[in-house]
Image (cartoon, rainbow, N blue to C red):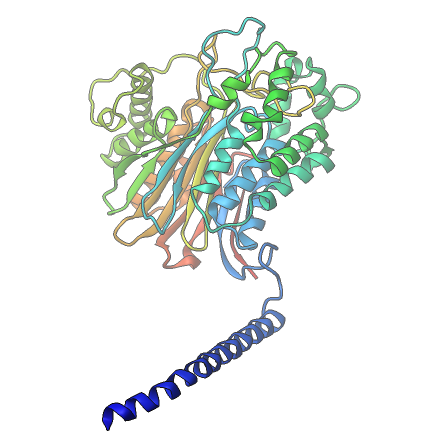
Length: 496
């Protein structure tokens, strides 16, 4: 009887299953519709700005500091549009190739420290302007192998969940095509080298007035050829500059300017490197990740920070920084952490060190990027790649051209999984102290970022973001600072 009853009811249960599924489906659709209606109402009554547009994020944004105001504004817009720290850093760096090409360019490169709060483990990305295997036969000013575009693309890829690459390229492209204001930073660099730079007709056409003087601060200058190159990178991808049509154009064009033909094979072989940063423990319980060699200014900054942490004088810290950096260059390929504890190193740094530029960004979640960029000389070789609008960087290790001391660092607390501070430095031999000084002032002494800048020797310049009570945590206490002795700007940290 029970068996028969179960047999009789089985078809009935089977026939009701589709009805139940349909009922659940309609209920789900109804909930989805309600959620969509609620979101639409919020958008209308709260924030109608769509994602990807400045103003999408309300309240705390994060912060940015760099050495040229327009690039800082672009990075802040990206944060306001919902981008993360890597998105903002990429957009600002490409903008710097337009607005500060004396120190940052597609022909050059750089190095960055990235802190992704989800991984809670910083990493270094190194994409220095590539050395040549020898002096090219057709070169009186040998050019480095470009790595900037590939490095910046890799930077964004290391911190996913952000905005589309094509969207982030747009500000730099538009500035190159339609004009950017001449900044105090770029104008000062132009005045310093205008004689040899304006001997190059393409550079003169971009940066000089008709009577041969540098374009004045605030006046606009255009670089349509660079705009075309940036368009090609946006449309075809950065790989085109190393493998495709853009690579072939670079090969043909560099043969014309005495920079030594940069071959497609050299471009193809040039790759960014993900490297373990140099790590130092602070007494506060925080850890600091510094750029590692071959960006040896980070290692020098780590040595200076250790010296300051052990209560040595500023002069001793600077001397220690130079000693460790010099040893790193002599012993290429050694263990950088071992150099930090080695005593008796001579405090020498041979040659004249080239200029660089710093960029620091942190976002509302506590992700951070701190970078230093270089052309291995002011305006690199001083010669613009014909038809492409960017200056060829100077090849390191040839003649008097030495690699710069690229210095950047990020401090975080691994136990709290929280961001504390990011610093990027520039300024030839003072770049390491431009990183170590502010870190020591804030993390060791609980002093302000301004106090750290005050102990940085000339010509060092610091770009700083700090959250004394960490992030996530107390965003209202977070501040940004661009060294007041320079021409940069710090922006953040809220949007109304």
